[in-house]
Length: 134
Image 1: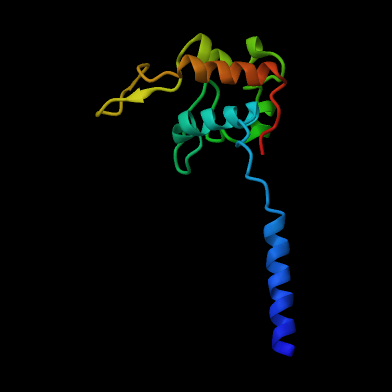
Image 2: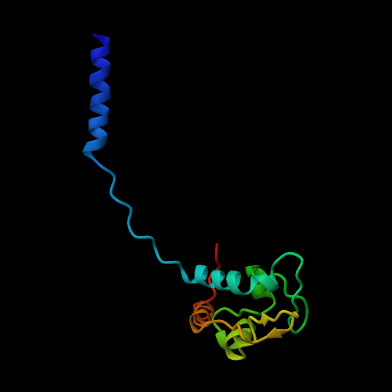
């Protein structure tokens, strides 16, 4: 008798779970502008300006912290809301100096600059006030 009641209770619980299936997951949300900007910096800049042990120099000193949001702001590489005044945008999009490809002898060239889409992501991110990434 106990076994029959236990079986009925288990069947009821299973049936209740099947009666209200979970909805299928929705589409994956598109990355936010700040996530896109972070990805551009991580994929295209970090190798020289962030990877431990590398010291790539800017105009005034070592820039080995490219993914440190606070330093980007503190050192005025990014001036929120002002892409025309932000050194990061100027160096990458206007001058086209970064990133650089290196030949087999370690000589830098300008052959590997950011794509138009990558440049636009950085410009749009700064223009939007450079929201902090997670």
